[in-house]
Image 1 (cartoon, one colour):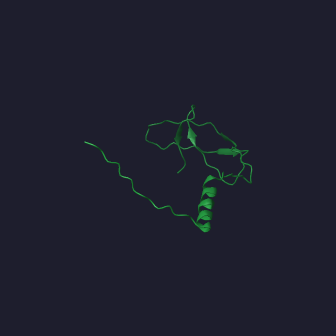
Image 2 (image 1 turned 135 degrees about the vertical axis):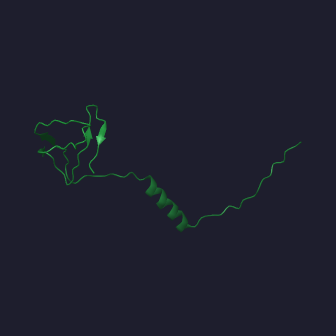
Image 3 (image 1 turned 90 degrees about the horizontal axis):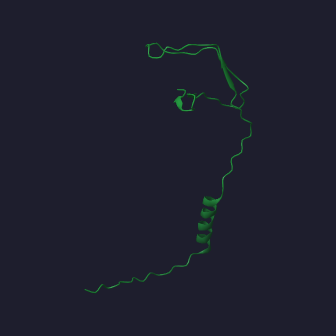
Length: 93
């Protein structure tokens, strides 16, 4: 059985100058690198606290008090609790 190859003719349509400009502006927008500059230097700072002890699993909430941050700069800050390997254990509410 022979297979027939069907070819459909498509009309070629020329784009107008405004259409070309619209396509060009979209392409320029998509492929222009974006640079983000911080106006303010940011420093995470150092946490220091009074000695404390936790008893995990005793049914009582474990709280840390008298924690201070020294040397931090920037408009916002947030603490992330990690273990010694840097695995995130908890985030602020």
